[in-house]
Structure formats: C-alpha cells, structure tokens
Amino acid sequence: MAEIRLEDVRKTFGKVVAVRDVSLTIEDGEFLVFLGPSGCGKTTTLRGVAGLERLDKGRVFIGTRDVTELPPSKRDIAMVFQSYAVFPHMTVAQNVGFGLRMHGMSKVKIREAVQQASQMLQIDELLDRYPAQLSGGQRQRVAVARAIVMKPQVLLMDEPLSNLDALLRLQMRAELKRLHREIGTTTVYVTHDQIEALSLGDRISVMRDGAIVQLDDPNTVYDRPRTVFVGGVIGTPPMNFFHAEVVADNAVPALKVGAFTVPVPASLRQAVEGRIGGMLSVGIRPENIQVHAQEAEGDVPALVLVTEPLGAQQLLTVEVGDDVLKVATAPEPVLEAGTTVGLALVEEKLRLYDVDTEQALS
Ligand SMILES: Nc1ncnc2c1ncn2[C@@H]1O[C@H](COP(=O)(O)OP(=O)(O)O)[C@@H](O)[C@H]1O
Ligand SMILES: [Mg+2]
Image (cartoon, rainbow, N blue to C red; front, side, top):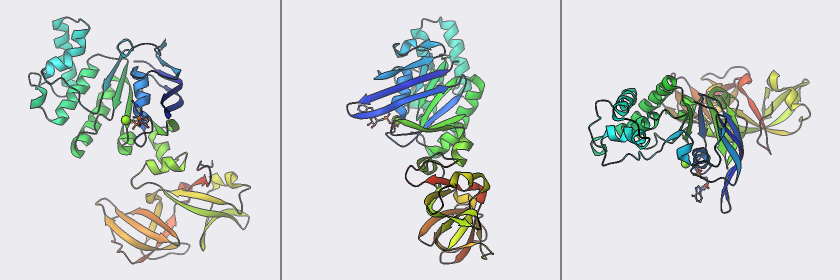
C-alpha cells in the first residue's frame, strides 16, 4: 500500500489538453473515484499514474518513489480495464497466475496465491475453465483476481463494470467494496456512473475538461456541489437550478422568484452581502422540495406537468412560474398531472451560485 501523489500533471494530445495541471494526493489505503463525463480526462489521468502515458509535465509519486520516468512494470501497480482483457487460450488459473509466473515465482507459491485471490473473487470453482466458458461477470472477476494476486501497492481500475448488465453491476459494486475493505490497497477507480462513485469512493474527484472541479467525500459532493456543473453531474435527477433576485425583506436577505420570496438560509446571509438587487443561481435537490397536496400558508403554488411512479418515490415535473423543477416525493398520495400543489423548499438545503462563474457562495 502507498500514497499516490500527482504534482502539476499535464498531458496533451496535439491541441487537446486531456489533463490540465492536476495536483492531487491519494491517501494510503484510500479508494478514490474519478468521476466525470466522457472525454474529461479520467482515463488519461489514470494512465498517467500507471505509466502508460508520457506526461508533458508534472511528476507522479507512489509512496516515496518518484515514478515519473518508470515504466508500468516498475511501478508496483495493477490495472483492471473495462474490456476484460483475459487471455482466451489460458485457463482461469493460468490467467490469474500470469503475472506471478512472469515474476518467476515458484509453482507451489503461485498455486497458493491464485487459490487465495480466486476465493476472494469467488471464482475458485472455475479455475480449470477457459474464458469462453465464463459469463461476462465471471470474466471480470478473473481480471480483478489477476490484478490483486500481485499484491500491488496501487490498484487502478478504469470503468471495470461498464460492460456488465445492471444487476451484475450492482453485485460487483458491493463486492469491490468488500474486497477493498479486505485488502486495503490504495485504489483509483474511474467511472462516469455517479451512483458507482457515491457508493464506492472514500472521496470523489469530479473532473471537467481535464481539471478537478471538486474533491470531497461523497456526502459533501452530493450535498454541497462546489459548482453548478457538479450539481448536475451527481444525483438522478440532478440538482434543480433556477435564477432568483436577491432582495431585502425587512432587512433580511431573501430570494425572489417571480411573485415569491424565500429567506436566504442563515448560513448564507453573509455570502449574499453586497448582492442585494443582483441575480443568483439557486440549487436545490429534488428531495429537498416538500410537496403538499393542499397548498399551505407560505407555499409556492406549482402545476404538476408529469408524474412518474418510481416505486420507492414519486418523481414530479412541476412548473413554477417560468421554471420547471424535478421534485421527489413519497409514492402516496398520487399527484396527477394537471393538479396544483404547494411546494416548500427546505431552506437549509438551498445552495447559491454566482450566475457568471457558477461557483458556490459559502
Ligand atoms: N491517444 C489519444 N490521442 C488523441 N487524443 C486522445 C487520446 N486519448 C485521449 N484523447 C483525448 O483526450 C481527452 C480525454 O480523454 P480520456 O482521458 O479518454 O477521457 P475520459 O476517460 O474521461 O472519457 C479527450 O478529448 C480524448 O479525445
Ligand atoms: Mg475513459
């Protein structure tokens, strides 16, 4: 196990800046997730750690070693890719033991290590089979076993579950989490799936356009997105955003949307000082808007446009003035499209963003 440190890492492909001066310390034993849309630089950053890309500038440290100039084989890392990349002409046992054979380990020791890794991944019954005789999920387990059998200092995974169907993905996600708890290897995990990121990460590094826009634990990333972009990347459906004017309501700052005002939460009053009369972007999660079938005093009236029964909750698309919001509420009572409901925003969950920079006020 070891800490990983990136210092000012930059990688370009012609005119494309894939990784934009990224600095980051991944703690010893941490499970860190890179999350972001396709093309934001997750894979390139990971390949930089692995030594599969030559950096334009910057340095990579694993533990106390500066590995910037070292080839992948000298970095004490193991990698798992989206494509299972298992050798079709080798049995499961031969696949899992491949790296150890290359290292010249004795047959007895290899058998022992393969057995142990295979048990962890629950493929020990399959050791004599060939990959063609395995399901996709089993093949991916072989790839993971082949990586962890090396007892690397660092485990790097690039969208390892993307090729699996939804149910298997769910199972494997929990298994990877358990595996990490057992072996404790410093892990960097790339995904564009925000649920995977929330579920697996000790911390999530949200990337956009080659740069890290937020690096925090999952709850913080979810509850306090640093930018409008992050609020949109995390959460299904994503955070709602609408524009509001900052007004003074009896000397207390408030947010005015159309005919309605909501007080600025106490924790943000200082942040809006000097912004009276200006506009802000307001962010609020769908589950932080309370819905009343009977409009109550102080509620904002809204028209239900669409009702989606999603089992555990009811997802509403509602119209408030010029804005359309997503609201998650209890499955009962069913609120039909066309009805008018009352909305109450959970004040302490309101997040405020500068309209131009899209950065959170705090
Ligand atoms: N080998 C390459 N040659 C040219 N451009 C590349 C190469 N690899 C990645 N890129 C570009 O670098 C950017 C980041 O890519 P990548 O790291 O694969 O993103 P992600 O993994 O987040 O989808 C993209 O614009 C991509 O097109
Ligand atoms: Mg990628």
